Picture 1: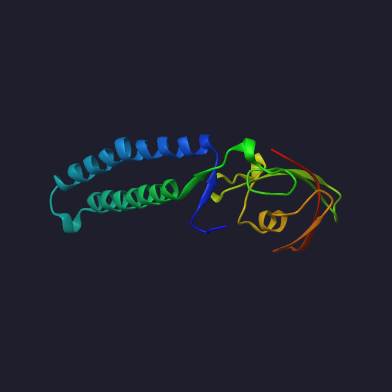
Picture 2: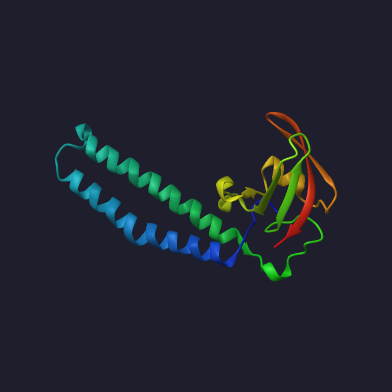
Length: 158
């Protein structure tokens, strides 16, 4: 997998585009207005409000640039073409932690979509990397901060 390419669903890409439009069309003009208002208050050397507005604008521009980069490298994955014979991006994988016997279902997603509370883990996370390419019945050994974890793949679906 190319590190620069992010595999996402069509819905996620649309959500990213909406976020970018909001940042460009609403947030950026608001930041410019805040700088203009702070500039009108006098000496820029001792104007903390101006400095804060400029810093906020810099952070906003960095956020816009990052989102533009993510959209530029995004590749849509059609869920109907996903091979469920092995764990790949966008598959849902039901695993059993062999030390705790607890079963969990994870969906393997791109870094931008990762949300552990929703059961979505990044393809670049230790567990995500350990599960990639595994088939039902295989055991993935994952080195995590807590030590070696073993997960048995029980089921793979979309």
